[in-house]
Structure formats: structure tokens, C-alpha cells
Length: 345
Ligand code: NAI
Ligand code: MG
Image (tube, rainbow, N blue to C red; front, side):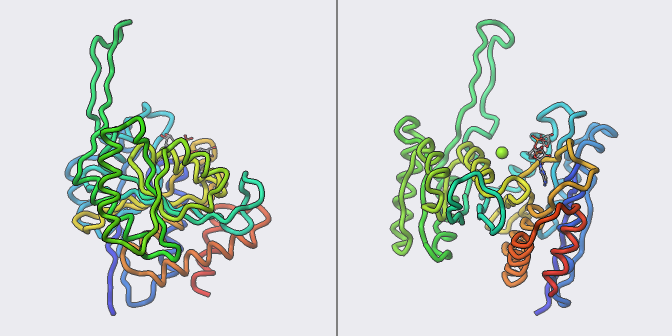
């Protein structure tokens, strides 16, 4: 089989650039000779914004669209007003490319520190809806800046949007050994959106008799993520709840330096985007202290999405083995080198 990957690379700002370099290093090392890798780098982020005032010009968006996938480091810098790059670049990409599955695996690797006592077995994946909920910008403010200001931020939930992400979550659950899917919402209070989610979840579930299901209110889910994280296999939830519980999930599984994510359009109509969950970490940028593991694991997620399962597994095994032996602090580059050696070994 001969294949090619036409990859868009958006290193972004701060440690984004440093960790993406390691992700690419490991990617080149793991790919077999018959898979041709072509990369094109995009200059987007704080530097571009300062130079031209642009976050994501439409021409660039059109060009990005032609790639098989996008690898992103992180964007954001203290010199840019908060929200400019996050909304203008990240959210714009997620909406323009209809990334309705925001995929965030959480696994407690050997030898990594967890704040949880007793080292529970943690290996679950959160399927967070990525294009609806309260994140669509459907709101506004009245009497702004006065003591009588009114602000709304309306949560958008469509049967179409819920059904497609719930179906994706069932497929992922079906493909995993434990075959368990948990819906997280708050349908005792958010009754309209909550019942839409629950009804669709139950209806689609009839097509997946092999998948065990349950339901948790989001507040209860935060308790169980800390007290019994081993109870989770696949979680499906809305955009806002997913944003919050995945940060909690990253915190209990060894931290932000290990958390990978995919912004996925499962139909393939648009390129999917893979990125570490962390930001540009201006506090450590340029010091070589950034852990590139989350970026490298994001590359593995990308390979799985592109159908290169063997190569994805090789990266995950390399990370697992590397973490098991980690002791002395190493630089970003040294960790990348070690992982690149392991995937070829
Ligand atoms: P952050 O994730 O950049 O950093 C939080 C803390 O974790 C810092 O102390 C940092 O040093 C540490 N950290 C993060 N990644 C690390 C790694 N790979 N290895 C070792 N330590 C690591 O979050 P923060 O400080 O809130 O945001 C910094 C900038 O990044 C902001 O402009 C923010 O808007 C942006 N951001 C961008 C994201 C993206 O591009 N997807 C996601 C989150 C934040
Ligand atoms: Mg977040």
C-alpha cells in the first residue's frame, strides 16, 4: 500500500513551536517508507497578529482546507488581548471545519504522578461535542456597562448535532474492550437540552446492544472522576461540560504535559486538527522545559484518524515505555529524541 499525508502544521506561539517540532520528529521516524509525508507550515498566532493584525485570513482557511490533517501547537501570548487568537483562530477553525467531535483520551501511564491516592486504573476517552452548546456566540448584552446590564449566552442544541456526536461515541465505545458509554449532562435542571440529549442517547443506543450505557449529572461526574475514575470508558457530553471535565481528567492523569486532543470531522469533509490540550506556556517558553509528550500523543491520535493504526500504537507504546523509565529531568528535545528512537526500535 502506498499512501501519503499532506499535513498542515501550525506551530503557533511559545512552547507550541517547541513541542510541534518533537511531534514531527516522531512522526517522521514512525512512518514506513511507503507513506510519503508532505508538510506545510502556517505562520499563524501572536507574531502574525502583531505584524498584520490578522488571526486567520479566509485565503489561509481555504488553503488549510486542502490538507489531510492539521497539527497545531498552541496559540496565545500575554501581548495579545485574551480571546483574540482563541476565538479568531482556534474556535474559527473548529467551526469552519465542522469539528463536531472533540476527542480527549485520558490514561494514567505507568510511573506518572497522579494526585489520586491508590493509583486507580484510568483509561477513558471523552467525546465532547465541538460545534454547539453555549460556544456558538449566540448571545449578546443590553445596557452594556451600566448597573442594569443584561447578558445572554444561549446554549444551542440541535437533534442533528447531538445525534451525530452521540453516534460517534457509540462507535468508539463499541470498538473498545469494555464497551461502556456514559452520557454526562444536567438534565434535572437543564431540562430542554438535557432531554434532547437523553432521548437521542437512548434511541441510538438501541442500535448498539453490545454497548453498556449509563447517565450521570455533570456534578456527580466530577466526584466520580476523582473517587472512581476506573468506572469510565467512553464519556459523551456537551461542549461546555466537556471542556471542564477534560481539564479535570488531565489533572488526575499526570497533568497537562501528557493530554492530547483531536478536533475531528468524522465525515472527512474537512481536515481534522490535532493538538495538545495545553496552551503556549509563556512562563517556560524557550527554556527547554516543555514536555512534548502531549504533542506526540496528538500525532498518534492523528495517525489513528488517518487509518494508520499500527503506527499510532507504536507511538503510544513508546510513550508508555519512556514514561516508565523517566527519572532525571530532560529537555524538550531529549524527550523527542528518545521517543523517535523508541518508535523505530
Ligand atoms: P498553559 O497550558 O499554557 O500553561 C499552564 C501551566 O502549565 C503553566 O505553568 C505551564 O508552564 C504548564 N505547562 C503547559 N504545558 C506544558 C508542557 N507541555 N510541559 C510542561 N509544562 C507545561 O495555560 P495558560 O498559562 O493558561 O495559557 C497560556 C496561553 O496559552 C494563553 O494565551 C492561553 O490563552 C493559551 N492557550 C491556548 C490553547 C490552545 O492553543 N489550544 C489552550 C490553552 C491555553
Ligand atoms: Mg479547556
